[in-house]
Image (tube, rainbow, N blue to C red; front, side, top):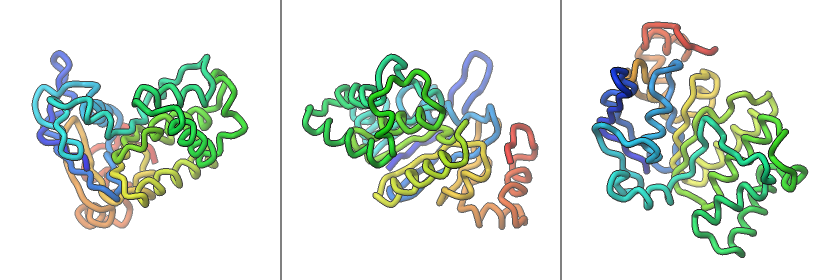
Length: 244
């Protein structure tokens, strides 16, 4: 379970996140939805311990991110907005490297990497260098890297960004599978279809703060619309950054 309370982060005079709180329980997909620049990625980075909040608290499975960052990282699998793969390593080597950083023994690591390659249909490219991979192939390697230590909590920042239709469908199935395994999944996006199709609960952020929270049906009812897109526009009061 991921819990964030009253998070605030500024960069100079820019307030990136202000008083953001959220709870992402096990066995659910919690979506963070907002226009570009709303503070989604900064929130994800604070949860993952990459950025220290100016105020507020993050707990992952009861562990405090400020005082127990290593324990938090062990319990998180993170797919960042920038995939961050090493282009000179093969797909397999990228995943193995991160597994070793997590302290996995070699036998366990080999077994898990093989399972992930099969699950994500990476067998044809597993032993090719990542340089030159398609967006979809890179995304699959990045999520394999995030899952190799079998974390209970998964952070996905724009996981379908730049993917074609088939790769997007495959990524959706992976995300649903994580939920079905009982993991806490936080899914960050500005793409309406993704959030509507995947999320059990949606947290709407705008200008660095939470402006609404609820199920897709609850948000539509709150805004008095039948369309989640219309509800989103009504809630944030602007169409800036909206991708339909």
